[in-house]
Image (cartoon, rainbow, N blue to C red; front, side):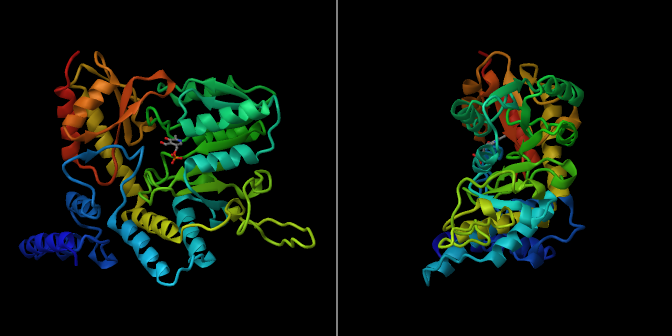
Length: 431
Ligand SMILES: Cc1ncc(COP(=O)(O)O)c(C=O)c1O
């Protein structure tokens, strides 16, 4: 036990002695490592007690309220342990640890969370890589049109812009509206022409956190025989959904945001029927099914694994598996309810702050756990710098020409932190 572990152990042992009637609480704080299954609170534990326990599963500092899960999620001890443990194990014998059994197990878990089959999931390094696989794999030609919003994250903007420059595809943009789903459907359908081949939009818009009506868009796209890709960077691990029910052709997400996985992990879903349409551009060991180099025959892996290639980090994959298991352990419905409760209480508190404008949708059904605001008189830089002095980590929003700040709430945030944000906004300089 190193010194930090010892201090953590001693402090929590004292805590445990004081709360002898809640043994699950004690074991959660004791070691600074992932809690065992038996240590988790029972389903009927009081709500704040449950979330206290969850909070203690993270090494994340308490002084600085971390409100940027939309940028990067903090990992719990369970994930850190899985990465370190796998690395310790593998470095003893210098093996890759590649194991299709382990990959399948993680993909089955991911499929259960996202509502798809394990064979429809590929491991990637991040959402951006997933977008690139789709962009470079679809048979698009000069003059083909792609619909996006004006408020894409650079990952979903740069990739398609590069394709436009290189291949001559045409990008058509519509401004997402926070007013209503109908307005967004109307704006999107007005962009559709005979040349539209693909719609590529976010599930939750990075700027305002607004949830887009993806199932409705999928139906329109299917009717018009247009491919539909969903940039899911901001939804896996935050909200419950089912990809088969949504009906999109592909969906990319990051392991290192709301899923709380290791950095540089991601997942790409490709609908089974689309696997032969979205060609694998980068290929190598693990992309192949039946192939024979000497005879010159090639057959791709029948599953989405065809998009994977070469030596990979088993510790990172094990960590991603632990992250998905952690989210599922809490329960995605419960995560969503908690995250939204925190976000909604911030929105409610804004009504007492006339200098602050809410840019996220006012209609609750379109809101996610990311709330975006703007100050009437000061820039996002100045507001962020002020909040920083209050130990509040937020994210600037400049996409689509906005001058705003985004505040993300996830399982480690607390009602006390919402109050700190409101106080920080109240004390912001006026000009
Ligand atoms: C909507 C959206 N798409 C793509 C990305 C890029 O994610 P990554 O850096 O993990 O590839 C982000 C990151 O914030 C995002 O918000």
